[in-house]
Length: 210
Image (cartoon, rainbow, N blue to C red; front, side):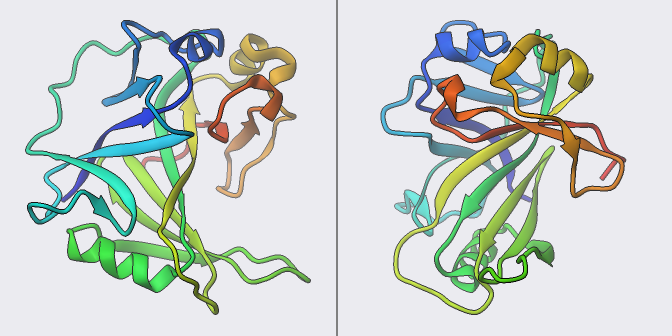
């Protein structure tokens, strides 16, 4: 099974430190994942997968820049983050061709676990497809009825926190209002765009073991 081992983010290290993450030497470890900060590009620039079945010479998965390693780094001591973040819940990827991306992921050993329609009345239909990548989930978002040319692209991150009230206290008015999450029994709040991150980020309370 492919495991998400890390992500590269264009945000400067000092921004994430200001957002309450523990940052050392330009990097941040959340749970078992390594985040490299200050990467060239914009937003989430690439991901690192362990044990993925990506053929030699292929540097991306349906347009997603990908680094493949044999094994994830050994678990180190869990870092305590002032913003109460404890793990990455999921990474969001957008695609112009849902079934193409689902098929491409399957060919490298990343298989669909479930899907859910989330379209709203009066708006184009939207489907979320979920994949397990070790401790984190990949949430793929696209249209179930139309497709277009172009690559899939990384979009956003959702972190699990131990105490969302502490997160709100650490971030102040940079965090939008807390609301009920789609997942029953969970609450969620999004980072405001004015906070300066190039990545849409949300913070969620923990749910039941998945």
